[in-house]
Image: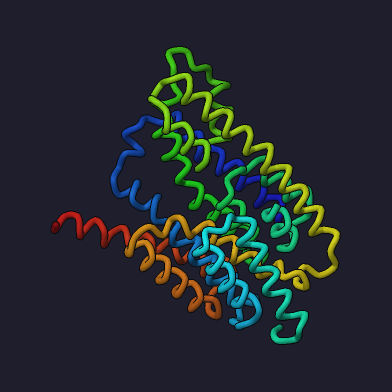
Length: 103
Length: 206
């Protein structure tokens, strides 16, 4: 089921981009739609942070990912670039596992 | 690079990963799609999450129209520019006067440069991660939430954004043991709908 998700998802996101260029402007100028479009990334990205940090399938678990997330937040406060934030989180989690301090 | 590595660590192969960077080419949606699939979510939940995150590109395209349109913009140019309509190319184009040659130039050069770099980075990251036996040893599973919070961070501009983020994360985490994988994340879209209604009401009363 990965290929269908990749292909349909790609076509869908492309059509969304194209929509803004070709449909009448007033359709997208609805203030409620505009507000919602700005709020959706915040809600979905935050949910992804939460789920990816604590979930193992349908179970919740606290492990080295939480320490990685904390390290990522510190890196963000220090205005580190994207790749550094991701690396800091990975290295923190890997170090905790290598030393046996966390699963 | 991080997308390629995270995508392969989430269970996609190098081809599927590269197809996303070529075809989808919008970071947050790509990360969301592989994140939901990697967490065991279904294809439908993964696609819907990616599309909801990609909806903002429609509004970028709409606001770019006066900057990019000329009297004789051909349809194939519109088809091409749609694919490179992302946060960065939009931000660069709107720094110049609407309809100016500089605005169009900034849009195309930024969009195409990021397209090439993003796809090269994806390939390097994907091949690197594919060479590993267990991505957990290198902490790649911890890189996934870090990638999402890095995408989220610049959007937390005010208190209501932070409140929405905390509420969405709390709702999604609480639903993990109850719903099928993939659906807890999607439920955050409902939190956004409620937040939008609350904002609409505050606007009317103020």
